[in-house]
Picture 1: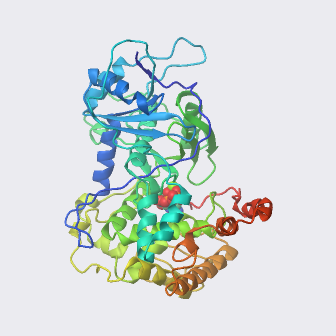
Picture 2 (picture 1 turned 180 degrees about the horizontal axis):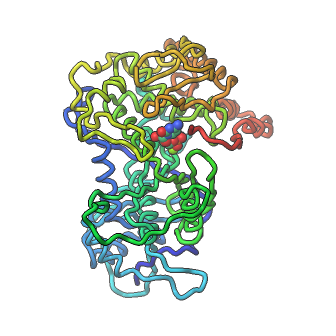
Picture 3 (picture 1 turned 90 degrees about the vertical axis):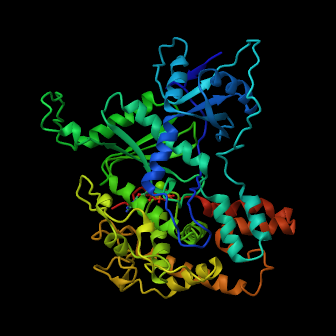
Length: 548
Ligand code: CTP
Ligand code: MG
């Protein structure tokens, strides 16, 4: 009996990303935070967890005892989590007590039997071989911490639960609690980053693979994609002029950008060397070249780019603002769900708005209500320790530890979530999109510098518009849908008996609602044609990107 490395030959079926996380903040409910866990601290903690963790494919949940017994012979175990991927295969995510512990278990791993199609690879994804050994190994009573920890909450159950809520505020909170990326989802995402880091570090020195975007900014839902950045971080010591022995290094002689070629290579490595990586796509001519793939062992779709550190700093900014006022993420989750339901957003980028600018719209609205401080305030409060300038000279300096913000930089809201959501839709129903841009730097509308239909200032690169891809038609649809949403919410304040009351009428797809009504009416005859209702659900496949 032994633990085996997953090999490049390993192949699973279909992949969707179901994952989630929840960050614990040291604060009292609806109180001014006393101590923030900063983004950098969370990232360091998650990376350390990943360095001492292993993902083990097992036969079933009942393999837990045997696996626990086997691994604890080598190392002490801190936690074990169970999850299934969409191929219904079972996995245990094991966190060992220390990185040294993990090293000793890794040394006990072996490779697949000799097979010319398989090249051994030591990644933190392994599988547990069945054994006939008589030896009985047990978990000594330790229970699985999380059952099905990476699975999405059933939509039907969710809508039924939303139906039973007493108030719209309760619905918003429930939607957030049930759909936000959870701890296991976050851990697994850092494992995907760790896997690449381990495999690529045999080729590149000082490589770091860092998650950014909704997986780490506190606004991500179960199943959101995983944005990763590959960075080559050189320490001051490594560049010290007093070191007389200097590596011979290869200079790229290609006329094409060297990083495009590195990303090409990474694409090939993903196909050849990374267990679980499938459907690798290279999008190398974009401003930010990316390689997309699916990590099937974790069920997550990954977008990997190189050295785009501003994305990480942007995530740090969103995380900080989201952790300052819990209403922010709860509102943003509802708004993102609503936008998907009315098809303002689509699974693929195109001429429509995406989740990131929508999140900025929510934060901007909260700033106009003085519930959040402006980004300018965060810049003013930055200290020496907050200075960050990216390699391409983008100044990402702003205060990271928000407990250092002076009092009265923002005021706790007296409005509940229901009122805030209604105010959000009313605010944008009246917003002058033609004349004004949305700027979280100023926290108030500013004059648009050009005639693009929707202008949302990129806070880290103020000359850029994060919604410059949005067409006139899509902006008009946005204006119409915010008005519809405001009407709907106002109407249901007096009537919570309707089957689309509160946020149900906003976050349930209209087609799904139509089908449910028919089902409730028990109209079997018409069910045949109900399939037609879903035709509208098909995603557009227009290629493109929302990134500037
Ligand atoms: N980003 C940015 N500037 C842009 C677009 C994106 O800085 N113009 C950064 C943001 O940090 C954003 C991240 O890239 O969060 C990932 O972008 P994207 O995947 O489009 O958005 P997410 O916030 O991850 O939302 P989703 O759940 O839809 O993936
Ligand atoms: Mg993303």
